[in-house]
Amino acid sequence: MSDASVAVEGAARAWLRESLADGLGLAQLVLAADGLTQRLAGGELRALAGIAGGPGALPRVLGSRGALEDGVEGSFAGAVAALAAALVPAAARGGRILVVEDELSPPGDPVLADHADHVFLCGSEVYHWRAVTPGLDAGALTELLGSATSGYPTNAFVTAVDPAGWGRFQPLEAAKLAALAAAVEAVAVAAYDAEGLLWWTPPA
Image (tube, rainbow, N blue to C red; front, side, top):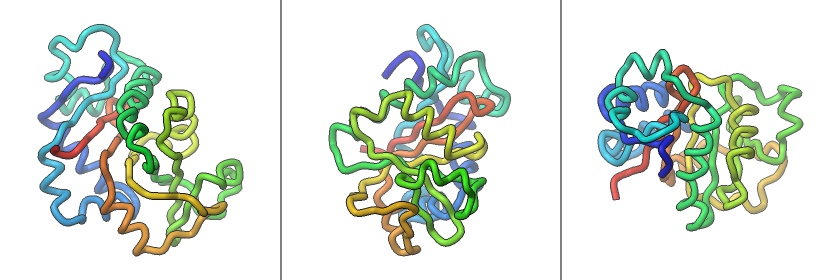
């Protein structure tokens, strides 16, 4: 991991759960999935805060409620670069997608037409997705996050699914959304005044 990624604890664990609780159906299913709520108390939680230089004493600062709410000096570009680095193992495994909940757009929103090949719908909810491949770099991630969410909450999930055959505005029934939730391997949520992210991976 880069210097833009440091392990955090403290209020960051509660922040992760709160972000998911404010999310759409996929986030709710992730919270409700058998054993996952307990798993969220473990695993690795890292701050992707775009801070230059070595981490030093940053884990304590980045894990505080004040930093999570008000932000820390850094850059969103650095946070997204750290997210791209965090996705490298998933890209190497193959067969994964990154799903981002769109908390603003209704299914008929004209702005979605520009992203229709990478949007799926579940009832009235909109989700953006990209295949997690080596080509999913910081630029592609910035475009994805910028088109899918306003900042709070930003809930994104790495999940094992094969999107082959998905069409434009692919409709997904509730059972398939639940299957996506059950296959979640990592979670990213916005923090630090929406200038950074928290990145959770489950226990080994």
